[in-house]
Length: 165
Image 1 (cartoon, rainbow, N blue to C red):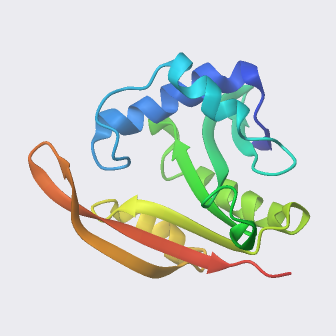
Image 2: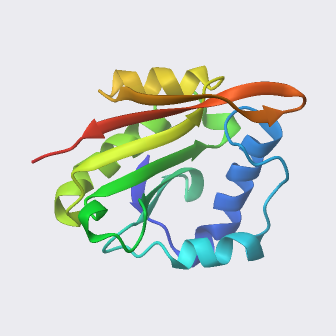
Image 3: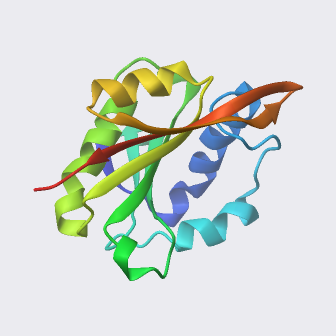
């Protein structure tokens, strides 16, 4: 497996993997698939020198991705805090792809001047809770009952980690 900065030609595979998570109903709060057009602006907002998107490749195919996004953009005091998001192709789950992507992102935090990472996840997403805890993230917060997916209420967890050099 190779991990590199995402390129524009990776976007269709990134969107496809994300839409798998939408269909799964538990890995994202989106309820409808996103389009390439929807995600193009998001993709362009992730500059490789500030808030990159990383892709994991196997045999030249994107099998997972991880993005770092600004927290409360424009507020200078929060510049060193970023949200981490990650999604893995359903055919490559439980093969270490997610752990590798998150570790890679954490290793890049020094050069990106990011000192704090946090993830927002649905409290029904037990797989993400396990992977984040395994990598040293701690639960920083819980907003109970704020999401409804297919008539089922669930909450939002905030998991975070201080990444100081």
